[in-house]
Amino acid sequence: MKAVRLAKYHEQPKVEEVPEPKMTGPLDVIVRIGGAGLCRTDLHIIEGQWAEITGVKLPYTLGHENAGWVHEIGSAVSNVAVGDTVIVHPLVTCGLCRACRAGNDMHCINSAFPGVSVDGGMANFLKTSARAVVKLDPSLAPKDIAALADAGLTAYHAVKKASPLLYPGTKTVVIGAGGLGHIGIQCLKALTPTEIIVVDRSPAALELTRSWGADHTVLADGSHVARVLEITAGNGAEAVIDFVGERGAEQDAVKMLRRAGSHFIIGYGGSL
Ligand SMILES: [Zn+2]
Ligand SMILES: [Zn+2]
Image 1 (cartoon, helix red, strand yellow):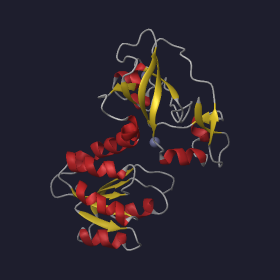
Image 2 (tube, helix red, strand yellow):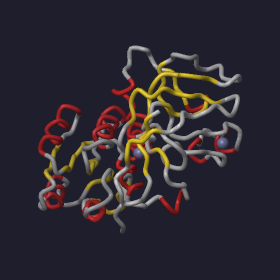
Image 3 (tube, rainbow, N blue to C red):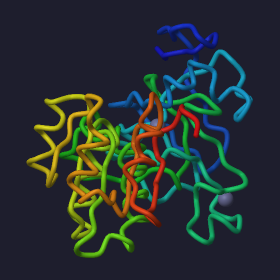
Image 4 (cartoon, helix red, strand yellow):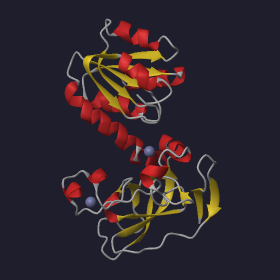
C-alpha cells in the first residue's frame, strides 16, 4: 500500500510503498482510510519536537486524524462490522487501566498513538482497535470529517474546560481561526453566552467567523493587543483561548488577559 513516511527529521515526508498492517490481536480493527487530516502537530513532528517525547523509530507513517471504512476486524470485535463508516479516535487505548475506566482515555497507561508513536493513517490502511473506532452515519464522507478526530476533539475539550468560567457578561478572546479555532468558536457559541473576540492574521478567516458567532473580529496586524484592550474597556478578557501558541501569539495572549483571567494554551511551539 501507499503511505506518507517520515524518514528523517527536518526533511519532507515521502509517499512510499509499504506492507499493509496485519491483525495481531482479537480487538484489532483495520480501517481503509477515506480521509486523513494534516495537523500542525505533523509539522512539529517533522521539526523533531516530538522525537524525545515519543522515541518513535523512523521511518514511520504520519497521520493521527483519520476516518474511513472498517476493512477487517478481530475475533472479539462486536461494535463495528466490515464496511461501516468510522471516525478513529486518535489514541489506541486498553479500556482496562484506571484512567480508561475513569473515562480519561488520553491518559491510558497502555496506549499507542498512531501517526505519533506508531504507524498512522496517511496510508491506504490503518491498524487501530475496537475501542478507538466510532461508527458514523454512512452518508458522511470520511474526507469531510477526518480532521474532527483530532482538531475537533482538541478544540471542544478546551472550550468545555473553559465553559464554567464563561458566564453572561464575560468576554473571551480566541487567538487563531484556523484548523482548531474555527471549531473552537462554534463550540464557544454553542456552549456559553460569552462575548467572542476572534484574533487572526487572515481577513478571510475573520470574515468566516462572523457567521459562526464571533462578536468582534480583530486583524492581527500589530495593533491587535491594543484593539482587544479597547474592546474590553482596558481590562482584558476573562479568558484567552490560544489556538496558535507560537510566533508571538503566546506573548500576546498574556497581554490580552484580565487580572485573574484564565489562559488556555492549546497551540504550541513557542515558549513563555
Ligand atoms: Zn493533531
Ligand atoms: Zn487504558
